[in-house]
Image (cartoon, rainbow, N blue to C red; front, top):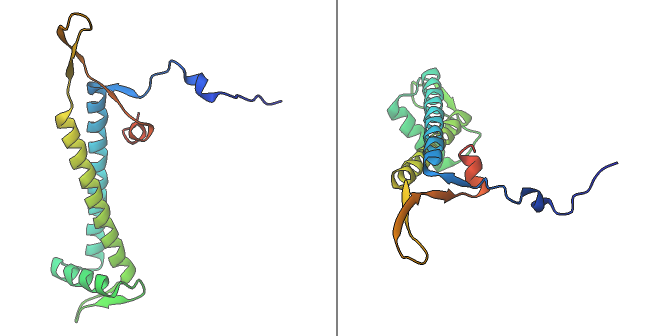
Length: 151
């Protein structure tokens, strides 16, 4: 026989999982940046293997990419006079890998910007006396941010 929980939210009363200290965020962001850098290196390695396999130099790559974008067809193979035939799927793969590298680099740039601007301590006024004190900064993250950072 199953049980039914009518108020799931009440199970989490008193559980504070969305608040993280600056130190915790820095560790998570540093790990995420390292993970993204590894992904970029892996993508660049795959791209280089494809370019080596099809003997695509920088000049030929630029020409093939322009043709691919102009014709925007996934069923044509591209060849330069005296060069190997490069299937459109290979070029599409190179384009997609470059887009993913650019996206991951943007994520790194944003994470590094946030890291540089995180405060370790914040000031607050004591109620009643008006005295200014400092306390460790606590940051509230939503569920998506927590998942992205690996919490």
